[in-house]
Image 1 (cartoon, rainbow, N blue to C red):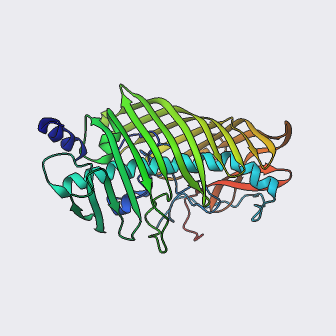
Image 2 (image 1 turned 120 degrees about the vertical axis):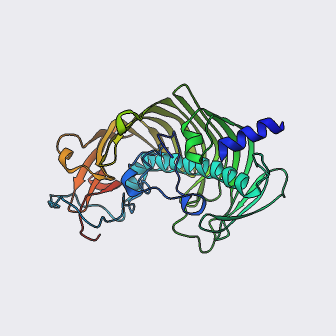
Image 3 (image 1 turned 180 degrees about the vertical axis):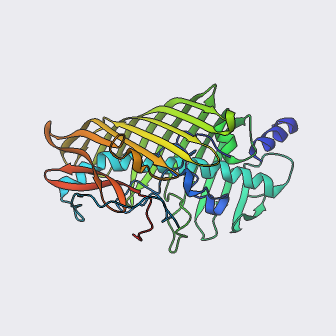
Length: 385
């Protein structure tokens, strides 16, 4: 690689609109965390980053210090804490897909961040994609020139990530966000180690991953492919996923307006699960110095087999609305929505719905009379969870 190209790439890898399949969840270790006001549950997008995780224990945002809205307790479904085998199988077709998509986004962002900080720390005047980058504290790093075949990242708690970068081009490298939000082509093999004995709970790094990842953005057209192994609940799953779509960004008039629309297709196989993914997302956000409002629509038509049974979610639709990172109270009745039919062996056994309580708006899935939690979003209230 010529010195001119190296210098150009350093400027690229030395802010954020909308990212396809991205997630700055390891920003606590590698970059500056985002404010809660940008948090929206978008599994593949991080210009409003995903709210924690799509797991039953996740919470979209921390408790605010003040609010103008009073929580209005509403009838809520009884969530099953210990689902039956059918309940577990029913949720696998949604939770595994969204979890692994989010993990792939975390790894992509972490990989670009590692190159960014290795280049800064090495201070060679070129882009650094080999050597060892060690996190010694918040935004504090050391760099060593070996190994020469990959970039080896060591987090402060001992967890590791190895990057084998094959393609790295782009038009804006003032930060990892800026690189991914603008025209770019990034391709790498990303390998992570074991979860560790005492991992930092504030730093998300998906363990035991080994994926080939390609991320592109050009002329508003986004693309991402992920092929390889990702961990779900301690079990390796083989993921072959493709995300294609478009992004719109406008920052005129003192505000920011972003729209992303994309589809995710492919397969995930692991343990007793064989999943065919067919999902579509539309996310929109408008923000200025006073307020941030956003909507997130997800359409799901996944099919899967689990433990010898066949399942499908037909015409799944989840619509969400947020203001400053919390449930938009003014649109609970007018915008929030969840519907879709759950099939087992071609027979309807339940579907998607919403459940509202004093603290959360929850997306639930019913299966043979069980009510199972898929997603949870914080309402603007000072009540402690």
